[in-house]
Length: 89
Image 1 (tube, rainbow, N blue to C red):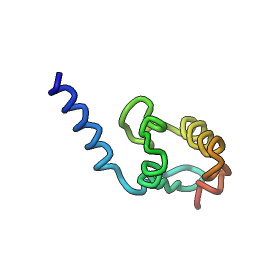
Image 2 (cartoon, one colour):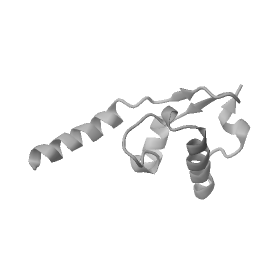
Image 3 (cartoon, helix red, strand yellow):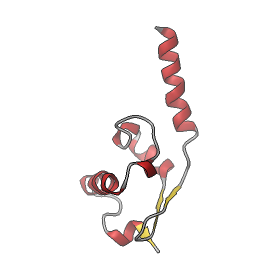
């Protein structure tokens, strides 16, 4: 049991230790610059965005991002919610 807990902790730490500080996501309406490290520090809960576990945000898709990111920004009253706030040409 101790080994399983230790391995789980190592995987969680490795995911946060090697995550990029800033991620640029290509999008048809203009690239999106996502400050990953800032979100980590602000939210302190990886599951807020990574509910299904570690993974690349780029692989989650436009619909997920619009629902999750814009929804969180609106809920918290912080962050961009308009198209041109995120999509930079």
